Image: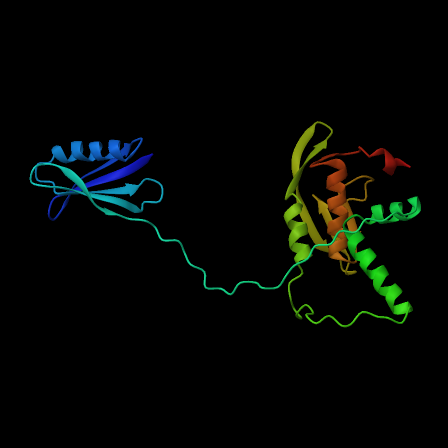
Length: 231
């Protein structure tokens, strides 16, 4: 452990020393030794080296004995926020499906759960038993967290290998005069296999780029195409 020991007389600071020790017994011995170097010293304070908080204070009596006078314990912050009394239940469903259905859901990747939920809602509506309206709808203007998660997962740049040249290509997002979103690493390119896409919806373009990252990794070798894209 490391602490800072400050020695005082009745008015002024006499010495400030950083020390390392194994326990309070050794610390008290160090304090006594430091105070003996200053006959006029009366008090010593010990501060935590990292937090700079005052943790202990010692005083020396007329016989030269050092004793602890105060111990400072940092109080924990008490939260007065009301506890969440709503019970949360997690349910997991497992069911068998045809290979064609599995392939369709597997291709949806991050949208599979929403696809299944929408399908169940449509079936209930066809059967004349629609779901009641959401009692707690999302407030209008509430930020869409999907964009935040997508930007957090995407790297800000990738390594690009072009012939013998190596450089980093930054994440680039532009909007065309036709209101299309162009999302790419580096300049937008129509080269096959390039980390570039164009879409009317920004989130769809970001999701496409996320799939590209999972397929190619954080590097782009210009001219290299994954085999399933060569067909």
